[in-house]
Amino acid sequence: MVGIYARVSTEEQAKSGFSLQDQVRECRKKAGTDQIIEYVDEGVSGEFLDRPALSQLRYDVRNGLIDKIVCFDPDRLSRKLMNQLLITDEWEQR
Image 1: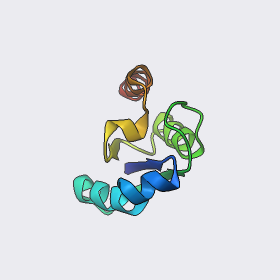
Image 2: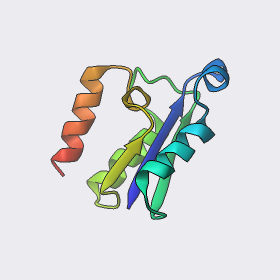
Image 3: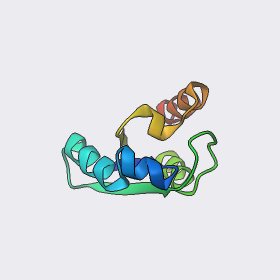
Image 4: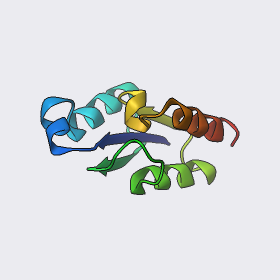
């Protein structure tokens, strides 16, 4: 199963950047399958790891439900490189 993660932190970002719908659409193309679960955080900062959809995605990866993750851009996963590396390491170790 493929997990798609999308996030926007502000309404302005959604208007001037890539909206959640744009991100999900592009991720679905990249995924190349219909076996997808979408994890979407709207209006949540990428600075912290405590986000509802990201927490659910991390849980589902740990429990073997998700075996591939697609996000539009690494900064959607986290604004901090350290957090991106932490999450990636966590997923690679499962």
